[in-house]
Image 1 (cartoon, rainbow, N blue to C red):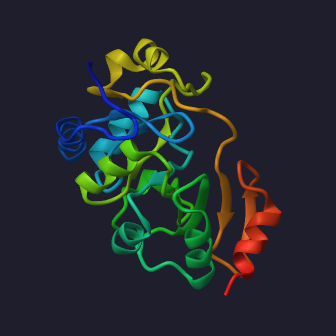
Image 2 (cartoon, helix red, strand yellow):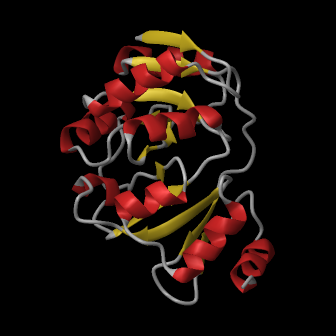
Image 3 (cartoon, one colour):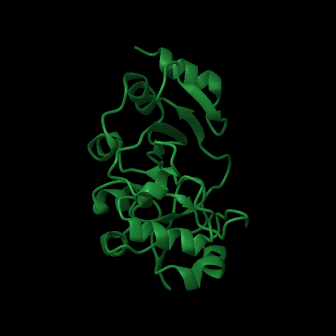
Length: 211
């Protein structure tokens, strides 16, 4: 595994392009998000998703979350957001809000685990957003650990656990950790809380009420 060190606030272009190239070729890359380290792979490639599941030893009945560079990339790659989702995205992206939306048929089937929905967010992490922008579409963002083991904010722990299993680690130092993203299902009205996380339900409701 190759390990590349970057400034988490301003990652250098070569590192971002290397990560994006590996992802476009079907590889798996570990990178820092605004919470923990994540494994990024191409969600539109069956082969890439199979390699990701193999690397994590993850059961294939569990869906994979995605991250994107911005709301425009979500709409271009996954479909237009419903009005409620647009309001929440405007209020909380970039940040720890995952929106469950209808999944396009172009996604690798294992990404959704047969649910017909996919979770996506725009993280408040420059490295992750830059890689998504360079790839040209959203990427996976499942935690960078063996399934069943604790997720980690420490790149040394990522290397220890995942080093032999992935091609590249983008090391931006320790991430801040903290609560996971709040997950809201916007495929129906009214939107439904799936997991309470860093954003309170009261704040979500306030975001939905904004004109």
